[in-house]
Image (cartoon, rainbow, N blue to C red; front, top):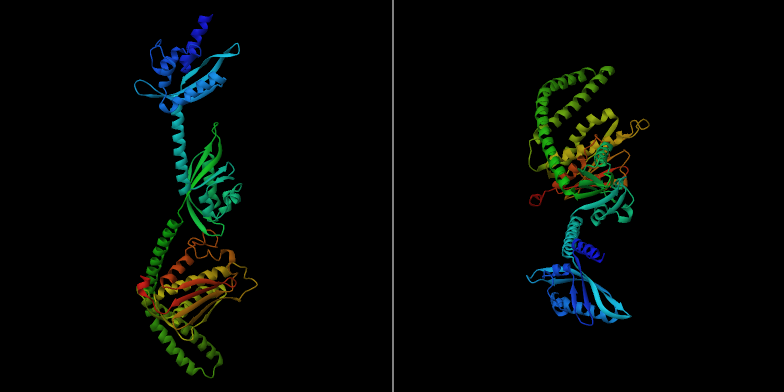
Length: 500
């Protein structure tokens, strides 16, 4: 039976790479098991005394093992330590040494213990530690570069990093437990998010660009990567997302698009100018005949009141046609300009008024012009200034038409006012519409921001207006909320070195 137990213990030793040892305190004889010899790579049966055994330990551990064995022998204090030994070939192993006192008749007669090779375990632990350090380092790197958030399956936020707080302007306390609808800008359609949710709930990763809104209402864009979290059963239990701020990239894209559209508009206006010049030329001659004949009718109809009314209406119509033709000829000339030149602001406004009246009168909107008494002259690209004013007038028209006008028929108006000083020209565009809410006033000139229904506005109009005004070294701002009043300040002379 004893032999069977010894064989069984030997098998356990071999499987666990663990041996035993015993130190007789009377004879100081040290006994090792076969596995202990094997761990030390010493031939089994070799006589090893206490001092020789201690020399296997690295120098920094020798005093420690002596102290542990001595305290166990004297006080009976058990010990267990992970230490390192050096073999004859110079290689190093991690070992776990354990010891306890063996007592006979209340006297400690020996110290016995186990000796286990834990090199693989310690290397694995060291590898795990290094891996964790790498993960932590990579995590810190990601946290310093990416906007990170984690949510449950329903999209409720469970974690955000500092960059998420910084860019959204919400604190962690304000975000945890909420969904990302808190930063929803309204830019994307419901279908956009429905398709995103369909993908990630299937366990698929998703990537896309999302327009969000900060706490102060400012728009920001993020390149978004969403990765589902899957449990052991293969079910989606949550999501982790990484986002990168691409706001500046989107602004540059919008600026490029606006520039292309602006150039296209200039080219389009040039084409219109050519066409307008051709029409003006064709109409001018017959119009002169009509005006001449109407003058003769005027002289012949002095005593006929009905005929006088007809002549006056013809006179009014021909005058209007003459003004339109003058505007067409002016457009033909100005559309070919690609440089700054001197222009009368009043003339620019009058021509905008002529064109504006054409698309306002049939909507029941009155366009009022309050021109500059000094008839100021400025250095500008006047086609671009016309473009600014036409954009503002169209926006005002759309704002007015967004209201129910049934009770205000004939009372809707848009006004362009011009004034000047020695150095500057000031233009104000106001309207009788619903005005602009204070909470969005700071955003209306941001690229892609629009108050119009989706599909009816690009959000580029006012941002383009702002760029044109600033390219003329001017300023545009919302001066009043209701009625909405846009204020433009332009220098009368351009500092072309600064503009460049």
